[in-house]
Length: 186
Image (cartoon, rainbow, N blue to C red; front, side, top):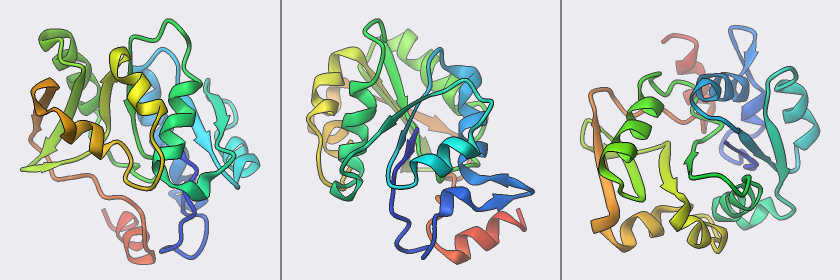
């Protein structure tokens, strides 16, 4: 779970903003936690506050020492923190609290069924997150830097990617005050 961003467009730490009394990052983590054996939360400059927001949830933390280097650096830190026995990882965003509950199990099932090393959801025609990466892609993920995230790895060799149609709109990221306001009316 990526939780190391700077929230520049929000103007304040968006992951800690409450929706119905619960921080956004906690919504995101609680939605993913039942579907994975080991959940690593990558933090940045707000490490202590994010840890406090997730108190009582069975997660591990990995602090990105250079979150200003972008999402790619956070992915690299998170993948480096995985247990050696990890066979696949779901890379999810801490600012995306409304991912449909069926998405993570569907990604895991598609990976098991197809054996493809990357499984990405496609929401009504738009590729999104979370994305599943099998262990044979981890070295590429650990080499990431910059702000483009893992998009370059997904696009590099399309034959190794399973695109999974999800019959739902793309879950919104909470990037701006307007995005945050919409969470309260949904």
